[in-house]
Length: 496
Image (cartoon, rainbow, N blue to C red; front, side, top):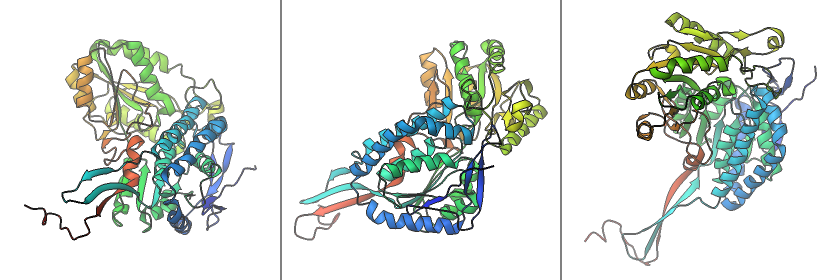
């Protein structure tokens, strides 16, 4: 079997891992399809990449921000031209259906055009000084070399959320893609290179978290880390980064609730539940994993939801007729299986699915049947812990206030949705739901790049991507210009 071999990008050169070791990137829908071999990097490769980024920072930070932004504008245009090929590459390595991978590439396009505009909007502030003949202002400065650790479920969109704001702010980057989905990051960075990005400004080091990720987090010349992944790994990253006082942006897990009130447009709520639950095979931090149903509509909604979910077509996402692709690897199948067993042991009622699909063409991949549980209570683990698969819990409630309490009763706080025609309850939910994102009459998925993205509690640590990313990738400098031609002492000479 022949397949391409890819290398790390370090200082503008494509180099194999110092160890010579590689990791195979395999299509989760068809294990006979090997996308390529990628470097299994370690600290030696990370050291070289950081050194290259540090060298490039000396000149990149001096490029005017509008000129840096022009490169991103060209990236957006190139991504438009390459969208179909990059989407197909992504479906091969990650599994989600073509409609979704096209959307993933489109999000990178949107991010490129949005952040390109920020090159002329890196605003600071001017403010009156307390002294005469003295000018005071604040300006944004780049952080330096930043480390980016990205997940497999949105392997081009999320890297673009990190790379583009970091670059327009004047930083240089070392990015470690997820081991399951490196080619999408390679495609994105190749597009940056083709758009004119100078050597060393972005460097790719492919490999595992233990081999490359830890070395990146702990490197003394890396000034900040942006991480997207599980809460468990995010905690590990934050603790390791703390030893060198690095700021860390964490975007982590979710256990997102869709609330459906008695007065909701039921067909609209069903559409949202299907898309939120089974889009990306449930492998989203914003996926709907709990559906909270007011008792007046619970039976009807449940019946219709099961009917619609059981006819979803599962298979290889390269087939345009497929609606649900595979899970990304065997480990995710094991996790989904584990939570099915936990739910059954807790007393939940299995209405649909409940296990892997292994017959026929399914035998070549890692597929899991769309799975629905009813009779779930808020205390059950299946209602509290992230599954990251197509496993959905249905819970019932009596009052609106009870629904808010159930939705907020977990450790996560990323995305929430409410379906209702009552404007008063809609605004109460916006106020009271403990989440970084709330949708009214829309599913829990569907973030747009020009709004802040992130969550509360165990989902995040206060930073935001989207229009909040510039705040993380810049640091403030206060500037005082005294043109009085004499010594003026703040708080002393102007005290009276």
